[in-house]
Image 1 (cartoon, rainbow over the protein chains, first blue to last red):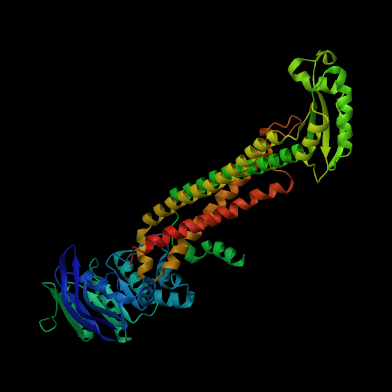
Image 2 (image 1 turned 90 degrees about the horizontal axis):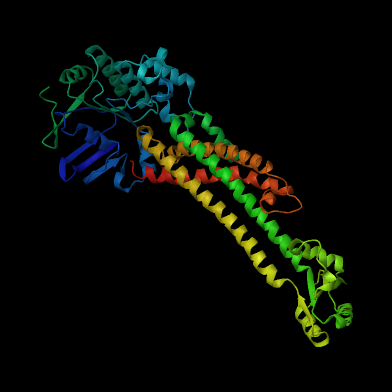
Length: 223
Length: 298
């Protein structure tokens, strides 16, 4: 699905990530931890090919990203849902239009019934016509999650999705991600919230990865 | 046509709305297209008017010739008769006649006044010749006149016609060059406006990339908007230009050049080509700018 072989990532001459090897298998659930600035966001950007590795091999769904054009990468991104901490909405579009954006942007028709159902699933049915700046932090994250799953992707990558949320809202978002994983989706969540990881491990068999000293380590046993 | 209409209608769809309205670049593009279209109407009018002028001068002067006879007064009548005899047997001549003294006076009047004593002046006699469509062999006639009437000189207006027609042709080319330059300037300005809009909407492009939009979709969202603005501006500018041309003073008998600047007959249809052309220029310029910028964003 997503496979990294000795991947390294350099910025301005310095290496941020080194020798990263990982294979995300279908239906798996991973947490990615590490201190701020360790490279969690960079790692996720590699996973949806916003960045290309400076060394090593990165494959998305069996294709080496180095050999792919921008449009081919765009095609693969339709199979990857991404949730950012800052959500990245188009503020002039309504919540419903933002959630439907993956369909609009790929010239697919929007099924209004399915869209309403998805908004109901994340608890935003009543806010469908609201503009993103009118939503609370938790509502924005849930809307971002709804947009990420709009195309029924195989993989969901979430970058600090609970960073700005209170505990109750964090648990609600986590439960949605767990639910998606139980539906067969591969989930990767970058977070430094260890309590969230502990809560998740009660529900799913999650692996915990840690980025430390530029390297990726398995860190599940001590949590 | 159907594809073009669907493309233009798309601005109303969800795909067309992914780009937020940007007031400054919208006004800039609209204003640029309107101003350029207005100027293009005048350049077109200039080009068409000079074309007509060149044709008119060329045709009017090409179909006529003048024979000038200089001789002592006692030989003048005999030389005139000799020239008329030569003309009567020359092919390619439709009509010919010696100008009367009243006509000579009218010709010289603007320079010497109405009281000119034409009869008492040693003026040459002029013979006006009108050619048929086939025209005359000017060189052959010149040789015959030199042999039979040494005092007669044929002027087929070539030395007047050539620089006049060349000047008119040059003006026509300048008009066409102006049209090309106007189109280029419009493409440049719309490209700058499009680049400004693309730069201002970097976040929109990143989000679209994130959700799997391909280059063509992202470019289309911007291209459609700028094409519509270019078209709308050009329609306004063209309409204003055509009204301004229509309000110019009508061509009068004096035939002054500026009063002849305008469109005639079917020529009024030519400005209608400007808005679609402006839309094409806007489309090409914005698409090139968008695709160039998208290459730098993964």
